[in-house]
Amino acid sequence: MVSVSSGASKGRDELQGKRMVVFASSLGTVFEWYDFYLYGSLAAVISKQFFSGVNPTAAFIFALMAFAAGFAVRPFGALVFGRLGDLVGRKYTFLITILMMGASTFIVGILPSYASIGIAAPIILVALRLLQGLALGGEYGGAATYVAEHAPNDKRGLYTSWIQTTATVGLFMSLLVILAVRVSMSSEDFETWGWRIPFLVSVVLLGISVWIRMQLNESPAFQKMKEEGTRSKAPLTESFARWGNLKIVLIALFGLTAGQAVVWYTGQFYALFFLTQTLKIDAQTANLLIAGSLLVGTPFFVFFGWLSDKIGRKPIIMAGCLIAALTYFPIYKAITHYGNPALEHAVNASPVVVVADPAECTFQFNPVGTSKFTSSCDVAKTALVKRGAPYSNEVAPAGTPAVVKVGDVVIASYNGNDADATEKAAAFNAALAQAMNDAGYPAKADPAQINHAMLLVMLIILIIYVTMVYGPIAAMLVELFPTRIRYTSMSLPYHIGNGWFGGFLPTTAFAIVAATGNIYDGLWYPIIIAAGTFVIGMLFVRETKNNSIVD
Picture (cartoon, rainbow, N blue to C red):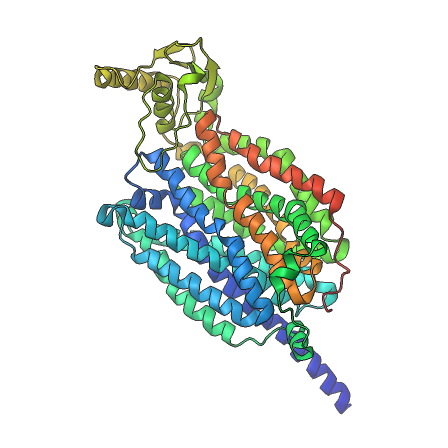
């Protein structure tokens, strides 16, 4: 009886210990994602604070580029900290990463604006984003590997799915904190100084995270490898200089993480930007809608992680990529229909067309504010972009001055270098404003016309796509690589996929929209990547759920 009781007690202690590992790793990672995604959640405000030296459209795209800078260096963080994790250990490596992340986030909260210190402000901001990206590059692989190496063989999908919830929960936390601060003060105060509070709060979360992670022990798989003296002496060389493993890294990147990444960002960040920047829905309403969809959708991470233990990782991830690629256009058109029906009606009833000589039209992205766009085509498109008006393009004969058609109304543009350009500008802008007002183009979404329930349903569908591709991915990446180089090998394809393919999605998509005028053209980027991942994944990725992760 004593031995049975002792065995049962030991089993309970082991189960409790595993749950503590999942909880502690997940909570620390939630806080790290909170820090990282505060910037994205406040991109519109940050563009005014740190990039106010350029026009609003360029400022927002430049703010998104600074947002993307953190993603650009994530693969380098994966290399640096992945190597450290395979040499020194999982636990101590992600203690370093969380300290880097927390300190960088806090400094953003006290960083002077462009109005105070000029060009130094955006330079320092980008430098802090780079540090955050390096930290995150080492964080995820460590947390996922650590949890997977503690999980039972038949529950790795379930256990690691809790790590997969952390990015979305971190975003959810950032939105809630921002909303709480917004409602506690006026809009003017929030945009002047209140936006800093969520960044400053992160120092408290940093202290909690460090304390929690100090309580953890090293993973048993790494400890066993360390005791046996089988650790890799050159994890970077073994991971990427030997074709057998490099081939798996490339398959993981193009057949799994690239598609997973664009689905993640299209369903969350791009959706938020689309609501606020394209449909002109007020930030508080948009944040509440996104937060609501995250609240409903987040449990599906765990569901699909659990399901992947039963039917496999590959079919769930591939299905998510395919369904997303096939349905993004109708879903985003439905978001317009339910979010700003007046805009949809105006576009259908009185479409805006820019008729211009293509040789006169340039790609109007000038982040440093040194160029002037003065051709009649550029003048017309600049005016439309400032109004947030969707438009299409029509080719005019060479040398013909551009005109803007709003339904049946034709408005002649002008050359910004003309001697009387100031007078022409006033007349053009007044005529354009009158024509668009008469055609019913709204300056912003009418709160009374927003169908909140249906808009929430569309956003929840996008989140469910996210959970399909993201829920099982950690377990699958861990199962692809041997213990001695696992941290390094899985981190690089994950962070190239999510840092580059995913992180650059908002910037790329909005640049496409700014160039073409079609508010849906930005979706071509995630659709093509997700479809490509589906094809490559179906051809080359093998199921991993039955793979052993103990060498």
